[in-house]
Amino acid sequence: MAWDEWEQLKSEAAKRQTTPMRLNQLAPSGGGESGGGKSAWGDLTVSQKDLASIGSAAHDLFDDFGRYSDHARISSMTAAGGLKSEGFALGGALDHVAEHWVVQARSLLDACAHISNHLRFTKNQHAADESYVAGTLSSISQLNEGFDHRTDR
Image 1: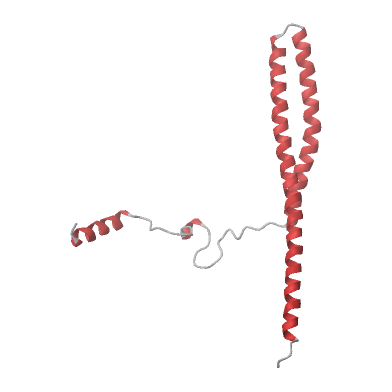
Image 2: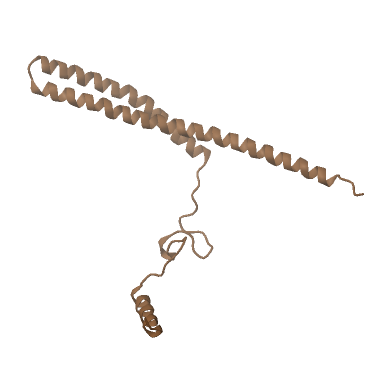
């Protein structure tokens, strides 16, 4: 391939490309940071109060849904048994629905417990990390004091 042909191909490719390649950033109009400034959406932040609220809601849902879903399951299974004993085909269908209800209810309860437990673990882990960092920084400041009080010989 001749040099002129290569330059022609590069020029044609550049004309076809409407958006230049961007590495590690969004387009200026697409959000994110551009030009070193903050975006219109702001930075992602979360507070302990927010996390505690989410964990509490998950725990409350776990407690309430567990109690109320059990009432629905018992009522449905009782009705299904009554309908089956009277010879209604609907009894078998209701029993089938009640069995699937149990599986779905357990899935939701497991998810709520996972959220609540994970947030509690995260809170405790961050507290432990904070304590470790504070201890480490305290040790560094004591070391610095030792350097400040040394005598020159």
